[in-house]
Each structure stands twice: as C-alpha cells, then as structure tokens.
Image 1: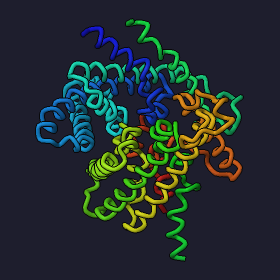
Image 2: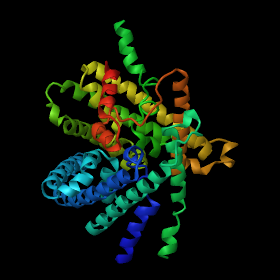
Image 3: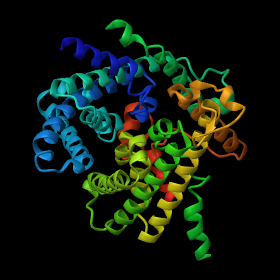
Image 4: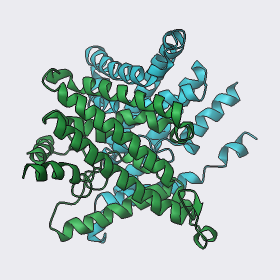
Length: 197
Length: 237
C-alpha cells in the first residue's frame, strides 16, 4: 500500500511532471517564473488548491454524480466547484490566517482558470484512484509544479543577456530554455522501475 | 465596405492576430496535442466549435450578465458547450475522443475561448462574435496544424499517420516528446518576432490581454496592469 503511494508520488513529481511533460499549467509557468519568491508562492498556492480541489471533487463525483447517473456533467461541476472553492479559501484565509493570505493571496484567483488544477481532478477520476491515492497524486502533481517553477526561475534569471539574438529575446528564449529543462526531466523516465523493482 | 469589415473580422484571426503565435494564448493544448497532425486538427476543430457557440451565446447574453459575475457565467457557458462536444465525440468519433483525452475537457479553461469572450463577444453583436469565433478558431487550427506538421514529419517521419519514405529512417524522435514541443514553439515564435520586428510591430508576449486574471497576474509579476488593459481595449476599437 505504502509502496503504491510512493510510486504514485514519485511518478507524478518526476516522470509525469505536469508542466514539463504533460503541458498543463503553462501560463503561470511562463508568466510567474521570473523571480524565485513569486515562483515559490505560486507553486505553494497550487499545491494547496490542488489538494483542496481533489478532496472536494472526489466525494462530489462519487457520492453525488455517480449515484444519479450524471457523470457527463463532470467538467461543468468540477470547474464550478474549483472556482467556488478558490473564492472560499481566499475569504477564509483573509479572515482567519491573514499572514498566509498575504503570502498566497495574489496567486489564488489565478489558479481558478489554471488547467493543471482541473486536469489533476479529472485525471484522478479517469485513472480510477481511491481517495487517498487521489490526494497523494495531487500532492505529487503540486510538488512537481513547484519543482519545475523553482528550477525554471533559476534558469530564467540567466536568460536575456546582451548576447541573445534580437528575434529570440523574451518569449522564444524562455520557451527554448523550458525545452532544455524538460529534456532533463525525460531522464527520469526509467527511475520508477529501477527504484521500486 | 460593410462586407469587407465582416471579412476582416474573420481573417484577422488567421495571421495578423493569430491567437497562438501573436496573442500567445492557449499554450497548453498547443504544446500537448501537436505530436500528430490528426490530433492537432481535431483539437483545433473541437475548440473552434466551442468558440463559435460560446461567442454567440455570450454575445446574446452580454446585456443580461451582471459585470461582477461575468467570468463564472462565461465559464459555465463554455463548460456546457465543451460537454456537448465531448459527448458528441464520444458517441461518433471514439478514437479521437481517446486520443485527446483530458485535453478535450480542458478546452473549458483554454484562455483563447475565455479571452475572446472577454475581449470580443462581451462587447460586440452576435453575428460579429460568431465570425470572430470562426476566424480565431481557424487561426488556432492553422497554428496547431503547422506545429504538428513540423513535429510529426521530422519527429516521427510521417504525416497524419502516413509514413514518408526517407524521413522515417532518419527521425529526430525528441521532437515528438515534450521538449520538442517547447523547442518548436519557441522557434516559431522567434520567426514571428522576426517578421513583426521587420514590420515595426511589437513582438509577441505571453498573452495576458485576454486572460481574466490578467490584472492579478501582472500585479503579481510586477507589470503594469493598466497598460495591459488599455492594450486589450485598443485592440477592440
């Protein structure tokens, strides 16, 4: 059981990294990775919302949608639940934990339309995970997102020196740097088989 | 004159305001579904269908939807059409449904669709909005097709699943893996930047103009939110 959870966690952090190998959540990855502290803030906020979203959408799917035969409403219901949840978290944090709200507040509204959060909730259902497995998988995806953001913000601080050709300045060089970081993550492809063989 | 302006609403999405290469919206599906031409084109067409329908409905309801809750309303409308497209594809094109997988559901949070709702459909007549949706959708499909052609021809030595004699023995297989997506996209944006620079226009930036969270995002990343908003308005004028 524990081994299975460890495999799910490692797979979603390193092998199926949401940003670098499944291309989910590219907008914040490119938009908010200029500085390390912002990248970390965004990453932590995503982990938090992914866990909460999974903890909410899982019971909604299995205890409300499935018994009533409404599985086809999955997309609509999940996006609404996530949007409401993000609003709710923001209000609660603002009222009770102002310190955390100050640190994560600006990133929370961004996450509503982040495809990584909707993606992880849908993938957990599609993969047929149980409740604990879903939570672990969400934690892994969030950690993978944080890892990619932090590594990439380090790479980005070295970009756009005076020697970059004019046409490559800005977005193109960022994307090509992302390609190289993503290439590094391909190296993890066999790690699960070797670690847990 | 009238006819020309209608035509220009459609054609501006093809190149001048191409949603992927110039406005830089919808990067996730652009990278994820372009490993093969068939997947890319079907993704483009599915998004086009959703875009036309959602633009029409949002434009019809634009005077009814209160300003404060407009984003949730748009998302529900878009999610509704995505569900319809999903069900139709599941019933009639099960292979494509399997191929696109989760990315089909993720059309809901595609910033092109939400962006066009916010930038165009909420301010223009239903007919214009539909034409805008059509143009932007075709522009999106063209961009995906271009990316997928480069990646599939050189990465897998095939075109839409049909093998190409010489190239299939000399594939650059990393192009169809994830790093190849970033690389090809980066190179194509560089080419667009080169063309835009030659014409004296502004180089493409990560598209925040249409994103509903633009103001927050720009505040978080230290850019000036008002400037971005004005840019969006100027575009609609």
